[in-house]
Amino acid sequence: MKHFDVLVVGAGPAGLAAAQAAAAGGGAVAIVDDNPLAGGQIWRGGPQHQRDSRAPTLWAALQAATNVSFLAQTRVLYSPAPGQLQVQTADTADTLHFNHLVIATGARERLLPFPGWTLPGVTGAGGLQALVKGGYPVAGKRVVVAGSGPLLLAVAATLRERGAEIVAIVEQAPLPALARFAVGLVATPSKTMQALRLFAQLRGIAYLRNSHVVAAHGNGVLDSVKVQRGGRQQTFDCDYLACGYGLLPNLELAQALGCATGAANGQTVVQTGSWQQTSIPGVYCAGEGTGIGGVDLALVEGRIAGLAASGQAQHMQAALDERARWKKFAARLARAFALRPELATLAADDTIVCRCEDVVHAELRGHASWRSAKLQTRCGMGPCQGRICGGATEVLYGWRPDAVRMPIAPARIDTLIATADV
Image 1 (cartoon, rainbow, N blue to C red):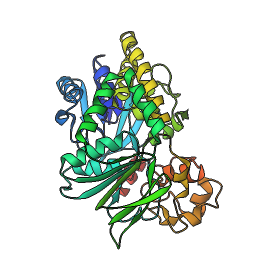
Image 2 (cartoon, one colour):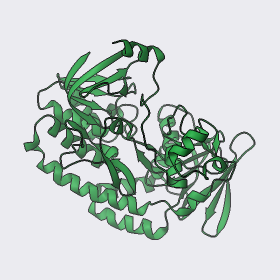
Image 3 (tube, helix red, strand yellow):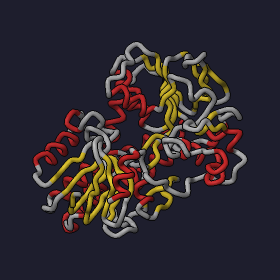
Image 4 (cartoon, rainbow, N blue to C red):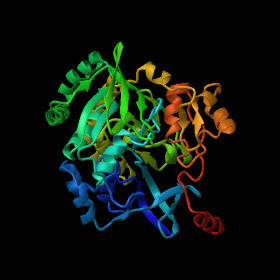
């Protein structure tokens, strides 16, 4: 049993920024993350190894702080009582007590079903990037990167850097929307420079706007993808298809604690006040859980949450002003890369929607709600607990999961037995 003044869940940019800000208040601070290294998805591999200079600087400051603990490979399971989180490590279980909690659990990719999307060789865009950053070999492999959003460019750049042949980048957003977004980058010069660097890295690669994948083909393994380009279709031979349609906030912990959610830029997010506080006293949320906005917004929201949680509100005015600027960027991002309606019509009757339980489109489309489909087909009942199919069914049928299943992450039986006996 451990007690902390400020407990931060998530070691991505928002969580690290929150911990650094909170540490200046002098209380005991802990960062919990279920990965072995800090950094989250965007700084995967450890913040000390990133090209973004803010990452190693932030990590060095946290390592130098004597009142900050990093609890790696620690998975949050549920809250047994207010001010407590039950966690599991590789070896044991523990109860963490806190005065203030900062939720910085980030986001995951939205994957949408289409014929062939379960073939070996078809991955999420960010998923393949993460594998490659971890050492997965792609040198000499032909890759189509598809879906929507600036992440596609970053993924393609990473893959090309590691020796992959990028066959094409397939972006579903139309040219007018992309042009408006590009013009809007004038308000954020750092993003303009980032975009220019990416396009320079990707020179010579086809960037197909107003296009989307309609099917993946292969005899047991992917060998080609069919792409809709305006009024015609084109087939590309490839070894991998990295396909992702933006990001979805990870809301499970916040919802399990009873934090109110709402809609922002077309997504369900945790509702927060001016200091990132949620509807639950003493609980704050920062980063992608409050809306998809990128690393800059995540960093400043994390700082605000950390300052508020540690009683340093007098130091946050500059951060509040910066947050307002990045909130506007997030809104422009959402408008530019809004998903086209055709993406909800790609699944055939026999296309699997829930991969954990092998539930196909024909079994789901007649149901009126997530709850009905879950009860009668087991959709969302598998190991991912609806994290993959939940995002897909929202696009396909307009459903949203209405409850969070406990524990919020897979747990060992011995852990649950031990905590039940306490």
